[in-house]
Image (cartoon, rainbow, N blue to C red):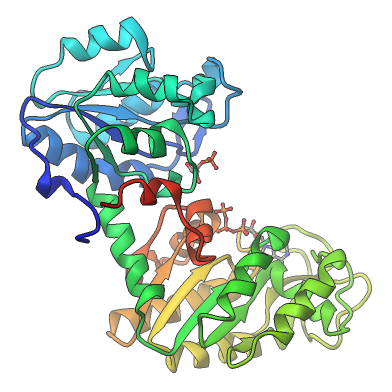
Length: 395
Ligand SMILES: Nc1ncnc2c1ncn2[C@@H]1O[C@H](COP(=O)(O)OP(=O)(O)OP(=O)(O)O)[C@@H](O)[C@H]1O
Ligand SMILES: O=C(O)[C@H](O)COP(=O)(O)O
């Protein structure tokens, strides 16, 4: 961690500390429905406040089009944050300018305020120098605790880190350490599991992973494209038929990396919970069938792969896990990974919004070595891409 300044290196007392956090949390009708990301940033905020810093939180929420819109206000999130923190969090209905200055000017040591959505200003996503200046004028030092937004080169993630003395927050530190352990200097054999639905966005990831891991397990909707590329019928399953050549290229360049695809599947003719289903070989998928989960033989094969592995990196469920009983494959593999991790045999790291939801639903998340709350940033990191928000923190 010597490549980054951390809170250990910061003189916080009496300082205005601009803290970039990720409060892009799921919400419905103005109520936060999942507080995982809030829980992750508490240690950094508490440490800054307890050391006498004045924590000025910066965050985005949703994807507003560069102007204020009530639907994307962070105000309700400030309430949830205050509850989790167990201390007041003053919400400031402005991101920069006089209102923000005056609210920050009246802070005392140990206070916490949350500024309005950074994306209400077009300069945020454009990483405009003028907007970076306006943000920088509000603080003395910058702390980035938002790994999950670090793939964005925005004013509050990248620009500020280059403008003010900058430090990695505790969650950023933990995330980088866990991810480095899993892919940069992992114990081998390393297994990557890639599933889920977003085939086209994850194909580049697969192409990169085959050069870095020992075994690549492909599941979920992803696998269907590969089965089709091998000439198998996939019926009405989720499948990107225009990407079959890309899938074939990935299979061809696998080299020493073993690729594990499902050998059996649970199929149904409707995409809904408890739809009548049957288990078939992947060579016997009918024209009306939809593959909604991997079958028991595939589960056994993946478990065997995990038993022989030392490191696991996982993104994407094995099936339509929100619909019972099509969660069975994901649940079984998640529980096996958690058990192997708890026994000390495996280092396991998982990331992705739906993946984390699936691991939680399986009761397996606590068993993993590290569960990242990052979606896009986790994928880009797995792809081996440079994350601008992380790069800007490097010494
Ligand atoms: N065989 C399948 N057929 C259809 N949908 C599937 C199948 N397997 C998995 N899915 C769907 O994949 C989705 C999750 O995949 P996704 O690629 O979005 O995961 P993620 O990367 O963890 O999510 P996020 O983008 O939120 O970070 C789930 O909604 C699940 O129902
Ligand atoms: O939810 C996320 O993955 C991060 O907060 C980044 O959000 P974005 O995809 O809208 O940039």
